[in-house]
Length: 466
Image 1 (cartoon, rainbow, N blue to C red):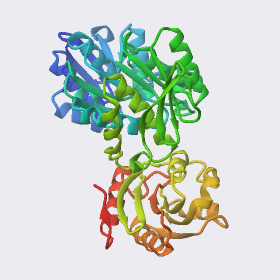
Image 2: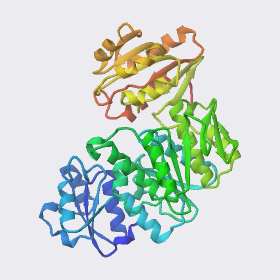
Image 3: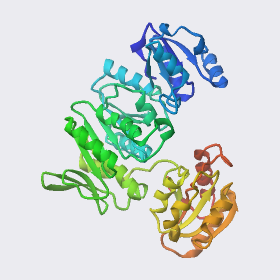
Image 4: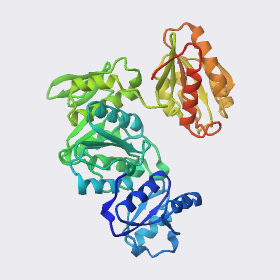
């Protein structure tokens, strides 16, 4: 835990008592603050009370007693309308912040030189965060990884010289962190997302840019420039005096890092040199992962990792669980768990990475279905459809790709394995990438992915990838 000492002796309101919210309460209390905890969810209130916190309806308190409102990132700050607790805090002149801001203040007070890598973007955040953490850990550093990727930032060990914090951040978290100041900031990409919470793509992009704008004066801003929003961010921040490293996977750059035929290449002043070769690294297959690898490599180099160590450690990256995770082989058949592919955009990245696909898809359908994946249907040798979306997906695939209604994952896995093996194709892939939420049959995508892994490894003759 990171005790939050910046509010010692003061009273702080906390709204939103899920995982990160309750972690914030514990950290504030450990640092000497009094916490008044609140939530619209009665179960969360009960958990906070059981943990020893004072709970209250913040509608019925004197807000001038509070030094701050610590808001959970899932609670609306601006759109579609500010939450009532935000309005009450603002009316009383009380600052509204989140757990990332509390971390930044503690780091500034106690270990301002401690390495801090912050990663954001519409897509690829989790893989890039896990890869940066892997690279730094394998290079011999003490690494703490958390934030939006899973472990609440204040549940990690405190910042100190030589300890690297590698933190994934959503736009909601950045919005609540006005003094965000990473050593290395990574902005991967921006495309329309969470517009219900930001109002417009322009505001969403502006929030993402704050992570780059906050990079410390001697730090490094790594920006993927393959979309117009991030290209503009790179230009603005360079003009503002930031050390900006541009990254592209679509074109060679005169200055910056690009990916050319599986080689990560650094260009500067007319000179070009290879940083690493990522060809054949299964956990980094696909264009989206080449961007993740290039940006992570830029961060590692900025923190002093040598190219020789970088190459070695890229090859040892196991990948992110449930995201293009290689779980086993049977003869010429590869089994891939992409359970985190919960919509068509995410599944597109998986389908674009393989040629002969035995595709397990379905679950609780999302708006738009899989019609947008039409260009990838020729890669699908057969689809095995499960869950509520099975009939809808079958109608979309009719006449374009072979399919069967498997209904359950338990039926789909052996059927796909049988057909893939019988195909004789040298690069056959059984791919779970559902393009759907899991909630019709599984509590979350992690449980769905774990079940796929179990089913695959129970098949006769499968060699697990560990």
